[in-house]
Structure formats: structure tokens, C-alpha cells
Length: 358
Picture 1 (tube, rainbow, N blue to C red):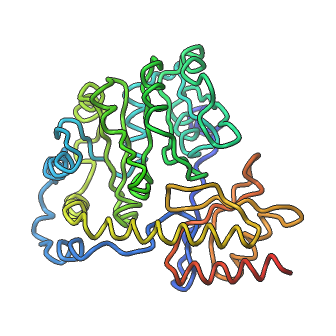
Picture 2 (picture 1 turned 60 degrees about the vertical axis):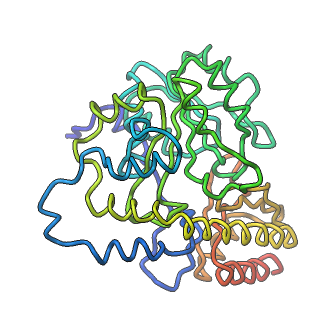
């Protein structure tokens, strides 16, 4: 007998990127920062006392929230710390979306949104992005007409890496009658010259929440730490009602605080990724694999016929290099490639040249 709820039995789970055990594999498939956490994190980890683990951690990670509040010039009450960005996504649905309501995203997008909607038992609506990866026209009107309760916008976008201007997000927040979640998992890699900053939106509107993560910019994907920025009317119900009592552990809070405290180190890794991103995009174009301008730590390269993206993916995998291939309409001629170290990118380009010139 199957005891699953009908919606769980019918759904398909999330497919994570491959996580190989071999140390010699070049991993360019899950958008991790190619550089290790900084010396402040290493020092904090070495200083942890095992005795401290017998007590529960601070339930709302107040020390970390205060540090983040200083960094972003907001109040600690505007921040919730979660066990990875995925927990924050779950909290948003659990707190603001009833099973008979719908969530939405501009597609293609992060595939976990659809999985979470199915698990929650709510509706899922997708509005195709324009050909240049920009937001669909009249998106707010479409969302309102479909009575969408919550909408996810990834910015910089995944999987293309393109960036939506704050002015467009502001217009969407103003016109949309639901909760607008701007998933900024990759925001640390945005070119500073663009002066992108969506944080003022959480002061201007009561329906905007920003998602940030330590996984990408702070090289702490193995730690599972993230946070949300928003008005207290959105933060408080999650913080004090639907969040687990002790959702993040003491070790994670301590190391995340150390990472935030060393902005100079983190910012240097972001700069190095941006520099390599530009070089890698130019080199891919010379190989006939163009990618749109990216403000993330990855590139979405198009594989032209008669070459096949899946074939290149398999060829790279055989050579010990993992990239991401999505067997989905509109993406099945593309490879998403995480920006690696200079040495990793050089080897990637060498193998791509070999595979494309067969």
C-alpha cells in the first residue's frame, strides 16, 4: 500500500546537479564559487569548542542578523536566516500560499519552484520570458488576472545569467497584488558598475522579499545558510510562526558570521569570478558557443547544429568535467557552465575545442 498523499505520489522530485566523489573531477555544474572560504572562516572553525554544541543555538540567529543588518543598512527585524535558500522558499509557501492558491515564475527558471508547489499542493503558473530573457510584457496584469498569490523572479536570472533592472522590478512590485520574491542567489557577482540594488524595494513596498545565500558568493554551499530581506510584515510570520524553532545550527551561524565579517576577501573572489566570466564568454564565442551577457557566476552557452548539447555534455563528462545539461524545451541546445578557476576554464576550453572539431 502507498501511504503518500495523492499530490506527493503524482509529483516528480527535484533533480540536483551531479556531486561526484572523485577529487579530480572539475565541477562546473552547480554554480559553486571556485575559491574556498576565507581565512576568517577557517579561524572561526578552528576556534569552535565542542563544549558549545551541548546547548541549542540562538533560535533566530540574532548575532548574524545584526551583522547582516549593518551590511545592508536595514534593521535586524528585516532579516530571517534559514537553512539554505530552499528552506526560505518552503517557508514562503507555507506562510503565504494556501493549497487552493497559485504561485508563479517567469520561465525557464529554478525548477525547485515547481517541485515545492507540487509538494505544497498549490497551483503553479509559468509565464515564458521574452526571446532576450527579459520579463514578459504585462506580467503584473497576467499575475493579477490569474489570481497568483506569490511570484518568484530570479535575478540575475538562472539559467541565462541576465539581469533585470531594478526599475522593472519596482514596476512589477507596484502593480502586482501578491508577494514578489526576488531570488538574488547570484547577486554578489553583478558588475558593481551597474549599481544594481534592490534593497530599497523592501522599504518602498510591503510585498517584496529578497533571497540571499551564502552558497555562492561566500563559498559556503556545504554549510546550507541563506537569508531573506523584507518588511517585518513578511518576515515576522515566518520568523515566529512557521520557521522551525532552531532551524540553523551553531556551527553554521558562527561560520556565516565570520564570512560576512570579511567582506574584502569575499569581494575579491567575486572580482576574480567576473574577470574569468568575461574571458570565458569570449573564448566560448570563438568556439562557436555563444552565451548571453551574464551577471552571475555561470554562462549559458548555445550549441549550434549539427553539434548537440547533450553530446558535448557527455563528452566533457567522459573527460572528467561536469557542466549542466537541461533536457527541456528551449534549453536542450544549451549548456550551463559554472565559471571556474583559470586552470579549470583552460582545461574546459581545451576539451570543448577537441569535441567541437571532431
